[in-house]
Length: 411
Image (cartoon, rainbow, N blue to C red; front, side, top):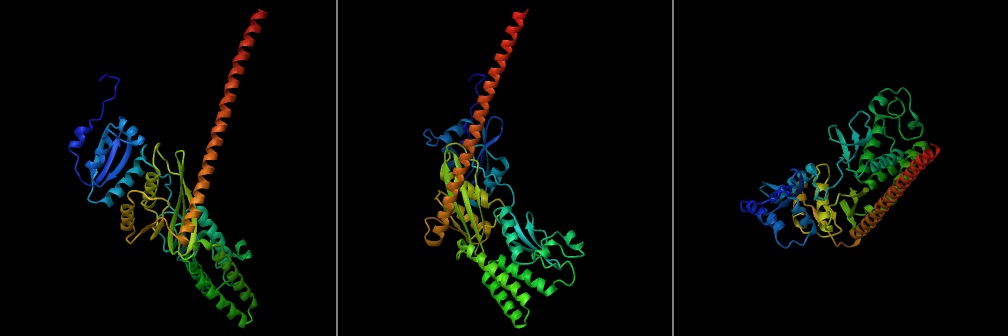
């Protein structure tokens, strides 16, 4: 071996002492940087497979040429291996692992426990007393929900310091989007708290119960000839029924996540639809970092694990998958352990779930096509800029040469 050749990893010596136990392995390059993290039921069997003479995967072949060292962590169960692998991927973001680029915690709608409760956007630890609804897939979906609710339930959304400083109702009261609990005489505590209760029931998906209560209040107001209140309840009922019509996707599903998948030219898109309490909380496209020569099954399995084991996700009881992957039963068991209840995967589903899956797959394809078109546009702009710079450079060189010739001729 010459001085310029890197020292080869002695895999045979390493494999001799490798235990046949469950665990996680980390592979390092010569710069001592983690380039791959993997898990195994049997460490010896799994790691040995990388160094076989006939390896079909081009990705594995490339990975092996960069290995300078390997270390292992033995665990007591496959569940621990899944969790530790996820933590290592999140920490090191290895070059040859699929990495979900989604570090933000997911937002909630929060109803506080004030004297006059506030409904608001919340992200982060649940350290305040009150009710949390979600998580929602994006900040946009929370804000859209809050805007819709503001038109139906006249509950304050203002900050506490603004609320305490009011001496007269603000513009939201004039727009009939708040009942002005900050100023005495505009709404009773009983009326305000009833609206808060109805908003809470609405967020729990109990729309029929909310509408029934409002119909009852409208009839009572009409009997008492309080037509202004009756008209207000009528408008609330109308707005709620309109929302019910728009939420056709929720159907009869209490708690369900549906994922669509599209994968072409090394770019993957996973599109998720998230349903809680019979309502669609929203949807979102995900574009994980995908190493070269990764398979669709590898990409999707890595996404599912990283998505749900991030620590800030509510794992649903039902998950609809677009493709099968090798460790489906094991991943299902890990998620059930984390959620502390039975989590079930569905694939090749029928009827209602099939409709959701088709919607998710169509959106994944559309998002992937949009992403690829954007990349083509960026490459085209760079190409045009490169050509312009080349022309400018040639023009500049020609100008300098011409100037030198003219100066020499005058001399």
